Image (cartoon, rainbow, N blue to C red; front, side, top):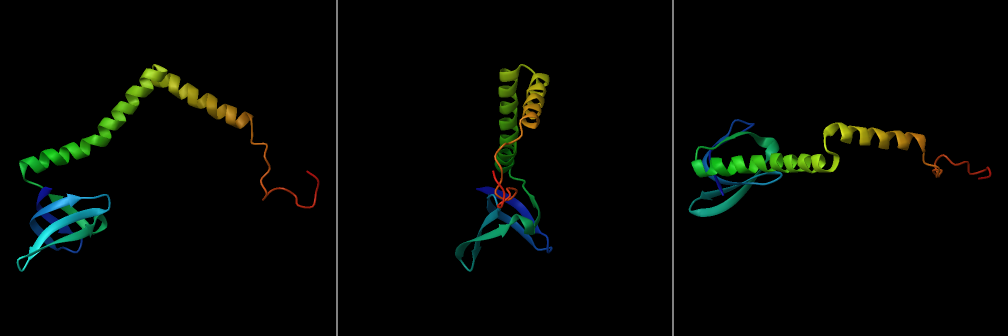
Length: 119
């Protein structure tokens, strides 16, 4: 779980010093009211910003943010291994596009086929 210093919602409400779990669609907030714990889900669309000041949480957030970048770097490395450089990749893509234009799909769509004529 991550410790948020404050979560500011678009409507101006502020939630301070709360543990959160980020999800693809929003944040799960672990809250307590009248001695009873509960979880509140807030969609990302309702959040203006989230501040973190806990050092462990900041390290985790940095790691979460870096994962897609590392995956992209690995993908680019794989492309370099396969093609040698980006100009070879671009040339391969252009050749594939030219072949596609030169060889149009021969299968007639039922939407463009004349239902009254011969095939």
